[in-house]
Length: 225
Image 1 (cartoon, one colour):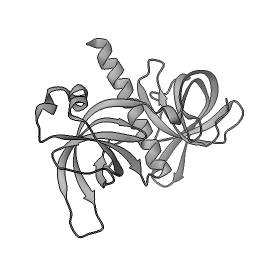
Image 2 (spheres, rainbow, N blue to C red; image 1 turned 180 degrees about the horizontal axis):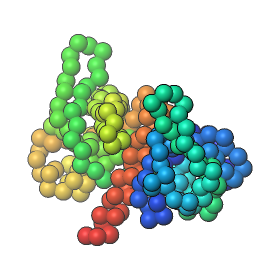
Image 3 (spheres, helix red, strand yellow; image 1 turned 45 degrees about the vertical axis):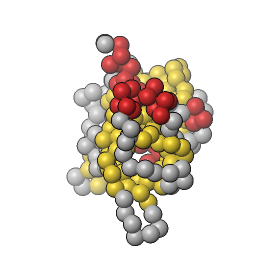
């Protein structure tokens, strides 16, 4: 195990059910310290899957064993829990250059970022998302080179996170039909391939976490269909 630049992780059951997020610290050769919000004793077992968000390696998932569980109050009214996480078998790795892309249907309000006083806002829909960008459809005519912004709820119970993207291309109509089906028969609907810009490392981690969870949900849903 060689985590290079890792400060966050997500913990899952052995059945890949999401449990909680954790802060990574005290990285040793074969173990790390994981710190979680609130008490986790009710649902944290001694063995779990842990996905680490490493800025060099990407998303790396290991089978891990937990020991030395503790709870403490870093300040009044704030409860945290911590475990020593021993790293076991690596079961998945998604390198940054091979970013996972998952289909979604998320309604957003898209706003053009312009140096002028003109402010264009329009309803849109995110059709797929990766840690690198999104595929967006809407009825407003944007152009390659435009910068737009929208907000997504990336973590349950958290506030929406503003995300800025650079429009790279306007999708060809035939390919758009193959991507989104009969919705593309609406000639007023346009598709845009977009890349995230001005993204802080914390926001990137949240996006990667969101994408990974959406992929798990999509695969589970496909299994039962």
